[in-house]
Image (cartoon, rainbow, N blue to C red; front, side, top):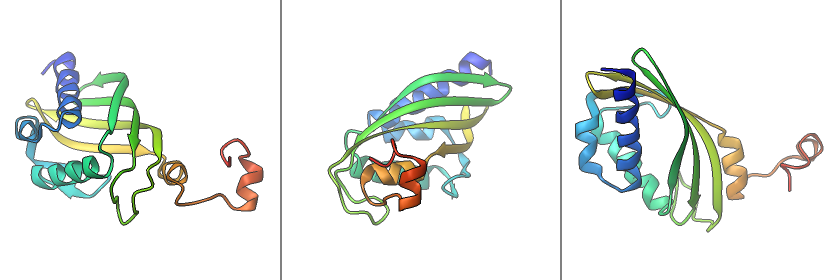
Length: 147
């Protein structure tokens, strides 16, 4: 596959997630897919995790800001927006609108996703949801973030 074809596959996965097109996952994700971040393996566990995310954040949207391909890897910088409207990982809905940035790293083989790693600032995300707060020391170190 060419680098541009690999980037197109990642864009299609992003679009499938945004549009809740779960059936397309079987076309884009290899049966042996491994999500190293969430420690999930296979298409169905990934599909269930994505569906749960869409229940908890019904208006979740990822915007691809930058995409780079090299060899069989595709690196994507995304900005996300979402409103926390359902339970997520044991956290009751807060109703808060949150934004975040992530770097996703995919490995593509024969036109399918076979591996993924997702780098995000979970601490910042939880703070934006209002489920954690900085300590007094943290507020002094990061005054703008502590508001």
